[in-house]
Length: 116
Image (tube, rainbow, N blue to C red):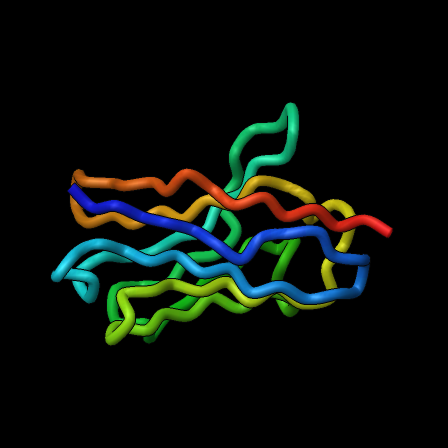
């Protein structure tokens, strides 16, 4: 079982930046692919960004491409999501997900609100 704890959310004005963190409780961190998802109120959960297990490949949803950056630090067992030029439509609960084969784990989420 892998525990994931997200942090870094908050209230930010349009155009602002935030960096989310996801700390994983596993000694096999480097064997897991990692994802960030988000879910706005009343909407389905959607994936935002993906990073492979060794951090060499990343993929982004079109809605965040060029504004968000996913990264990982194997020494800190942490996955990050740097979010720049935030828009009101980025308002959502953001979730970290890590998976390997049939096993997938989710964090509890961190709320991001973009509003003036």
